[in-house]
Image (tube, helix red, strand yellow):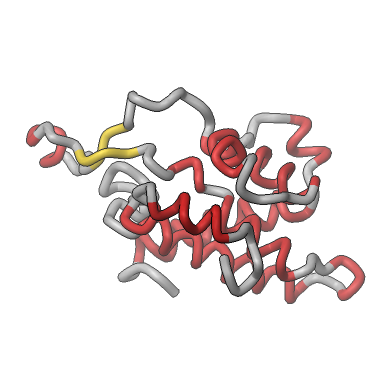
Length: 171
C-alpha cells in the first residue's frame, strides 16, 4: 500500500485495528485461502495476475500500474472482520473452520470493501466500478458496461483461487 501510495497513514492505522493480516480469504477448507493470512496471500496473487494480464494488452489499452495494484489489493477488503473462528467442533471437522460474523451489517464483498474504504482511500471512477462490479456475474450492467479491469480482476481471482487450492499457496 505504501509503495504504490494507496491511501495514507489512516488506512494503515485502520488495518491495525482489524483482523486483516490474519484474515482468511474463505471460511471453508474446500475453498482457497481458508487459513490465517489467506486474504493477504490472495490479494498479492490477484495483483500479480492482473499485472501479467496488463502486460499482454496493446500499449494503447494498458492500465496504469497504480490502478491495477489499487484494485487488486483493495477489492476484497470487505472480507476484513467478516469471518470468525468456528467454535462448533462438528462443523470444524467438516472443514468449516470459520463462520460468518453476524455482528456486522450484511453486504456483498465489493460493497463492504467500498464502505470500509470510503473515508480512507480516494478511488478513480474505474477503480470504484471494478470493486463494485467484479462479483456481480449475473448483472448485465456489469457485464456490458464494466471497464477492462473488471474482466482482469475476475480472471485474476479465478487464477489465484486455482493456484492456492492446487499448490502450497502463493505464486
